[in-house]
Length: 271
Ligand SMILES: Nc1ncnc2c1ncn2[C@@H]1O[C@H](COP(=O)(O)OP(=O)(O)OP(=O)(O)O)[C@@H](O)[C@H]1O
Image (cartoon, rainbow, N blue to C red):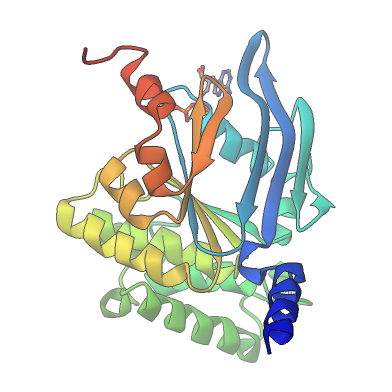
């Protein structure tokens, strides 16, 4: 009997843990702006499961990391791999085509169109063989994107405002609409830049719940300044400081890491 147990233990150890799959890997990723090194040789694994938060003091390089991952900036040095495939330096539309999508902190929709039209346009891009000239001419070609868009708007709790112009939505609803637009392209990896910025406590609670819900279907990486949210929502946290990866770990590990406390306090201490 004990032999069997040993065997089982060995076998279990040899099996890769699917929850620990790496979806995105950076190796020595560096982005310089002239003489300024905004991110400096960052080697980071983003695991498939759950929510990873990128935190760090102002100017640490968080936004530059996102911009480099999504193709807005080409890396100066280093590699970016999505499931082992090199994507560093590809243009944004190609990277989006690989399933990395960013939900913007800034308003990024057509305010004169309705909520469903905004999401439908994003969903349409997924249906192949469907060019811009088809947008209005083939009614049947719209049925699937419209059905998708309705479903997504329900998921982000905007079912009450499906046919309202985006311009008439509240601030919190607009942020949900931006998430809906990102979801319409069915990302594998969703990057969210300060998803709760400027929100009331109630709106914040709603968007946190929404992020936790969509994290069941895709990998999420967020930049977030509010430490209560970070500690509550994250499975893993990566801490940047002055362009470098200071450390990474679970919320509990990060919370008790003195280097992180020093980085946030600017090197000062209480005693
Ligand atoms: N396009 C750019 N051109 C020149 N310098 C830039 C550019 N983008 C960012 N930087 C610089 O790179 C450094 C990192 O900035 P970044 O915005 O990535 O930090 P951050 O961690 O997102 O900061 P914050 O929390 O304040 O948004 C800063 O010194 C910033 O001034």
